[in-house]
Length: 427
Ligand SMILES: [Zn+2]
Image 1 (cartoon, helix red, strand yellow):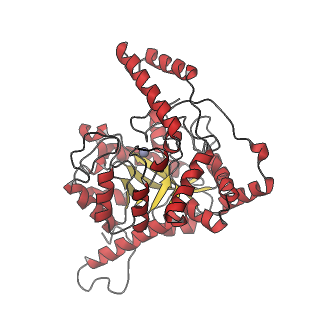
Image 2 (cartoon, helix red, strand yellow):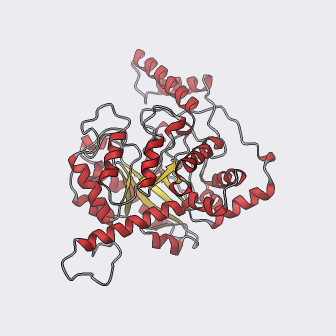
Image 3 (spheres, rainbow, N blue to C red):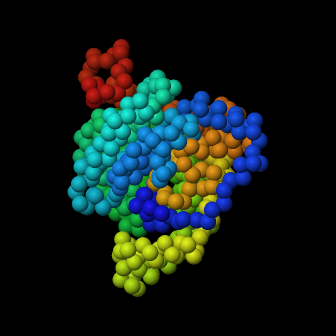
């Protein structure tokens, strides 16, 4: 149980649950082989993996099989993962501390270190052309998404800075409302959506070619982003509110429809709390009970006595994990609502602690998901869309919008014939 890794669920605490393993023996071996083959061939993109923060907590050599964590090179290869959007996660308190940009820089440094130390196993990519050219070469391709806009520190020019550092999506806020917009986890909502600066941020992200990520932000902020943006947006790691009624961190049916109209995609979060309401309610109740105990005994979360109490509490109050079928249910739901072009995978591996569903415990298990989709009658073409093509379409469109906007604002006579790709010269 590593609470520190549970970065994506804000106030929710993640739970060690009682184990029920997937019944592999009932699997159809032919379908199983086909699922594995599809995962290996497809450009499988996962838009949210929290490896950098995991390495920040404790550096591990993820080029080899690690005992802990949800991601490493051998397991990623076994699962068919091609593109991992690694989360440049910046905890909300860094905005008040004033060191958010420096912290983001440190997190980017971990990704660069992986690429530098293991060029045969990890490579950084910054464009769809990079991905299409390199996905079959061997290394796991690492793209970067910044989780929290706090590192912009109120300066639009920092967007250009982070674009040049390789950031290709930004989640506007995390667990607290920030200077860009309100957070779904925060009751304090100073902006009733986007701040005036936040509106400028969305417009400038469009111009630079950085995807806007609407995961974590409040509903009001979501709708305002869609009014402002000229490019499709993503929800990098959110699931369907239809299965977690009232929980703002997931997208409602109306929001999913709006996202589809915008051409965007919802990347389904695998965490048990995101896909199974019973799990979410039980873990929330347990959190309240533990907090009450810690307060009554004047213990802080990190005290050894508190940790011992929590461990014992978990042993005595196990909560059943969600199942892979809960994740597939979310995919089915989006497909039924808006078709197969607007859904993808944003697992939150290494971000939701020990709360992953049975059958989807780490990056080696994407083929299980493909198997479930095949069983439900999805075609290979549709499965490839879900595994990555939908996301690549959005990213490509974001690149195109950026080129168009840059051309529109270029000096008269410049670039009238040749359309440059977004790069530092064109900015
Ligand atoms: Zn998150």
